[in-house]
Length: 252
Image (cartoon, rainbow, N blue to C red):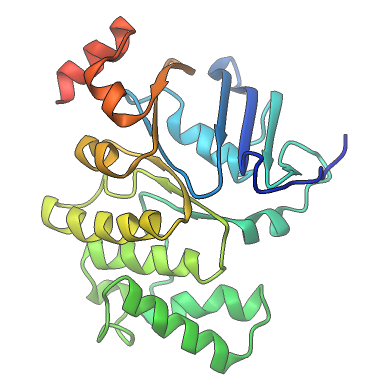
């Protein structure tokens, strides 16, 4: 298997072909295919247990796959010889849990990977971290520890921490699921800004209004397959599959 193919910007930045993933006897992904172009924002929606989170974890090589292929900028994620560190420099991921280091300040949390992984000079890492704190609207919180921040503030630090690695693709796995409605808005505003700036984003989300506003394309998954996908206007008003229509009728 060739770990790298020549990638050009007219090719999909992320390409999944016939991806299958099982945990023991349980088949979670049953042939998922998706292409995401540079600068696109894609939202994946669907009922719990439909394979959404498993799929985006496969993109970042947090889950291996049994069959099919995934490439990110021409890098074969399913190659056994994959350089996972090189992949994760390209692909940032933000989880439902913030996973911040509790004994580090917001600024220190954002600086850690650039210092350790990218080998940035401390002054450069700090300058970039302060700019990212401003970007996610947390000025004045640089020296606060995670325990002193609200859930929405911690999640925005987590987004800034991922951005500090200067990724080409950002994955968001239900990042607002654990937040109260007021702080959901703050986090979605940060993601909306990223999307508008042209960051390639793949989001697993239950926020339908946000998906409708920000996504270039929406994918609906159920029981490990993509049932239907379309641009938001078409998806929300002209869904063709009965399962899609039923799902939308329950949540809209």
